[in-house]
Image 1: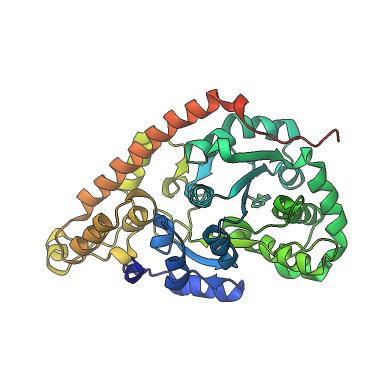
Image 2 (image 1 turned 180 degrees about the vertical axis):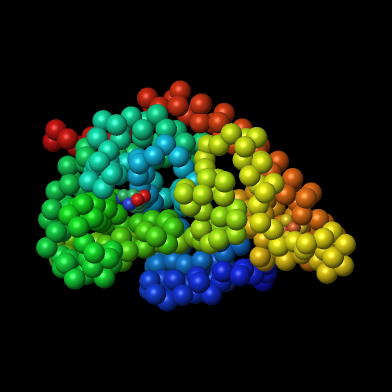
Length: 367
Ligand code: TRP
Ligand code: SF4
């Protein structure tokens, strides 16, 4: 497995190296990969490109010591995207390695930054986000859920931590500081530390690189907070799924290039049929010189989301390069798999929704 590291390359690789450097991450490479048992698709293919202190988690897995996984739901709009799918796949991986899982609803953050009332956030979480996370593979039986607004310990800690970061540090981390941003940041730092409140233990937070400032802030705070010897949080960072028009990141402002979850299966298939490929202008030319899978959005979808088997992915890569397969058939294959994914998601979602009353949701409000 180790030699298979990014054999398909990526035109975006320089950007990710820059992200690693600028954000002080460690590269997710062969070495760390070889230490992780049964790495999932995202890890094997280096879609997970960076990490922080993952060695601590590797160690806990190996020695069967306690560790925790934490992720947060921002209940802003009732749509997920492929990045959320990757977060859940990483949570699921660590969950299967024995980590205790915490999933929080960032209702204080959505109240402060998007003016979403708390009862509305609760409704969205229970009727949409949590069932959707379960449909994406989160094991609810092994997960503790909480709402930021109902977790007195997290709220108290966010106040206690407030003197540990200066306004200049906020500026460096998040750009121009504002009260909502500062409140949300302090709450998120407390969220990330919450699994350690009763007993210190390694915690891994799988995120897209946009969340890395929160992790850096938490690590800074941990260094300064002397009352408890918190372990600095670990993180994994995964790449963006490119937009169907070929730009780096999917954006909701371009709905024809954006795949959301859920989505009408027929519509999503149509969008994929219009995606930018790495193919040639004419079939004759492509048969002669081959396509460029490393510049192809459809191939990136196969690699990140649609094809589980490495050998099958390899074959598409080679057959594309040698001009054996053409983009029309290739897009159709991607569209069919994505359609199936959306249908399957809907079934699982409805099922999870029916069982929502069985969840383990923490309440500290009245303590
Ligand atoms: N800020 C996150 C978002 O916008 C939500 C969040 C809150 C979170 N607390 C967290 C994510 C802790 C990871 C860990 O989606
Ligand atoms: Fe992309 Fe497939 Fe066309 Fe190759 S054949 S460029 S992988 S769509």
